[in-house]
Every structure is written in structure tokens, then in C-alpha cells.
Length: 475
Image 1 (spheres, rainbow, N blue to C red):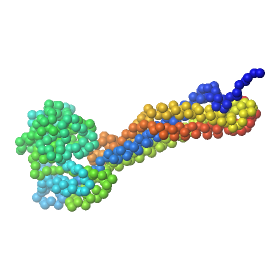
Image 2 (tube, one colour):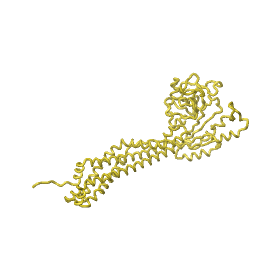
Image 3 (spheres, helix red, strand yellow):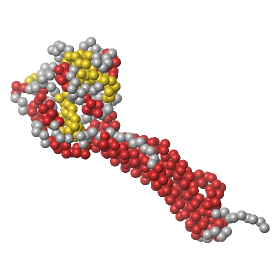
Image 4 (cartoon, one colour):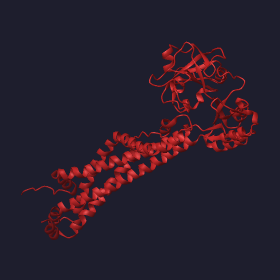
């Protein structure tokens, strides 16, 4: 008696059918692999952006900045007695200010504000002082006309350079020595270029002379305490090589005013106050505003604008990621549906034969679904494996899109603080993405469910017609 063996089950028939039609099988597996890869990458980018936002918010420094009010300065100038008005050498009417304090942030007011509860550190920055370097050279552009330039460097006095905005924003970084500190006297920090040009190192001495009136004062000496590297140009409202980044010298407050010839009548540009707890940022701001100083001459600038831009960047990044994910999911469903429709058309004859051999309709549909699910599982495994290297590319692409959209508006606001346009772009925090295994499993389950439902929906109508009509339709 001939032994024909046990009939093939649905699973065996599904595997053999997939092997007999490699093009069809590879198409479905490829669609699923691509969809799974992009969806997992998008999810990992979204997770990374949220995590980075939390870290960035915690690391973001909250500062308030005290500046003198220009409108109030004009008002006080107009109220000066007539003897302060004069005609300059060009025949123009001008006003002589009584003293430097008239147009300066007052140290007494700054010290009062520094005692406000919640203020952890504070800094004062003086107005840049043009100075000459006796027996030393400076950085110059040989193509630039130096006729109207001072021919020297500019000295920026700071109380604590570690809090100076060019340091905080990353425009400059220390390469040797130390920043000018609150307790330093007769100390300067210079650029790498200026140090190299003059053969200077930390501990060496430099001499400076007031460029506006070099004959009235003897040279003033200072010790080089630090050398910095210029990462981005130091912004300046003044033009000429005297004010270029390489020729910017930071000093303690007293030294800059000594070079300017006004040690007892300093001119301070602004002061900054760092809060100890960003969660109480607004409350500390209200405390600062309640301090007993002449607020008519000042503006208290909320420097948290950078943090607000950062938050806006993250919100935009999240929206872009969700749109990208929705697009990928929609395209994937459409492609799977079209693929299953193609399957149903090419398998009508096969379904009719199986039904003619006595197989139940449920078994025939189950075979097709099982074959599709097997291929989808293989595609998900391949897609999740590819998601690890692809995640970084997807994250970079989405972040770059946000940078392009928001850098334009950020530059406009960034001009009022140290850092300029380049620092504005740095407020966009990059996201580094790494897929999460649970996310990969969830995406795989969703892809397999879509494939199973689509394959069942595609082949069910043909099977429901019965074997004869299924065979007729396939001819």
C-alpha cells in the first residue's frame, strides 16, 4: 500500500508559497522593513528630543540684565542747564555730560540688586576702552584703511569673566591660565592670536596707553592671567581693527578704568544677575524690581529669551517628528494595502484550487495571513536592525530643518546679546537618537497587525466566492 504521507499544514504551505514567489515575498518584506525602520527611528528621535529638552532646561542659566534706559538718558540730557551745551569743532550742537556716572550703570545699585534673595552670582561689564600697545603689535587687516582707527586694542573691564556673555555663550574658550576673577587686580586675558604675535604667555606683562589721549597718561601695566581661543567672533557695535575679536582684551574693572584715565569715575555698560533656581525665575525677577534703586534710569532685561527660543525649538522639533511619523505610517498603510491587493489578484487561482481540494475557507485565508505575517516579521527584524544607524540620520535631518526655519527669527533677537547670529543658532539643541527595544517591539507589533488585517481583507472576498468563481476570476 502506497504511503502518501501526511498532508501539508497551513504553515508549511505558507512557507513554501513564499519560497516559490521570491519577488512578491521580497516586496512585502521590504515595505515592512522600510516602514519599521523609519517609524522606530522617528520614535527614538522624539524620545531623544524630550530627554534633551529636560536636560537642557535644567542646564539653561537664568539671567537678568541691568542696562541704563536710553530714553531716560535723552530726557536727562535735555534737562541739563544751558552751560552743558556747546558747539563742537564741526559746528554741531552737542551736550557735555556732567560725569561718567550720568550714563553708567551705578555700582551701588548693582550691589543692592546682588543682595536679592535668589541671586547666586553677578557680574558687571564696563564700556570698552580703546588702548595702544607700546612696543607691541596688534592684529590688523592689511587691506583695511587704518586712517580713522585708533591703531590699538579694546579693553573690556569685567568683574567676573566666567559670567561674561561671550564666555557663557561659547564665543570664546580658555586655553591657558584663568579667566579674570572678582579678586583680580591688574590682570588681563588676551586672544591666542595676540599672544602668539607678541610672544606672550601667562604671567607676562603688558603695557597699555589710553588711545584717545595717549600723551596725558603714562603706560599702565597688567599681567596676562589667561589666554583664550575665539570660537565665534565677539560681537561689537564699533568698527575698525581696534574692536576686532583678536584685539579684544578682558581686564578687571579697575584696570580698564585706570587705562581710560577715570579710576574714580567709571563707566559701566551693564550688569547681569544669575538666579539660583530656574523654577523661581519670575519670582526672583519681581524681587529684583522691588529693590530700592532709581528704576527710572534702568531697564531690567529678561535674558531668558534664549531659553524661550530653546523651548520653541523643541516644540517645533516635536511637531515635525510627529508629522514625519504620520506621513511614514500613512504611506506604509497605503503600500501594504496595494501590495495585498496585488497578492489577492495573483492568488485567486491558488485559493480556488485549495477550496476545490476541500480546504475550509478559514484555512485558506489563514494560510495567506500566515505567509504575510511571516514575511512581515522578517521585515520588522531587518527594519529594527537598520534603525540603529538610520536614527542618527533622521534626527540630524529633522533638527537641521528646525534650524533653517528658526535661525532667521532667532538672529534678530540675538543681536542684542553677546553671541550674535551664530550664537542664536546654537540655541537649537541637537538631538542624538538611539532606538529603544520596547519601541521597536511596539512598532513591529503594529506593522504585523496591519499586514495581517490587510492580507485577510484582501483575500477574503475571493475566498468567499467559492472555488468555481475564484477559478473563473483568475482566468
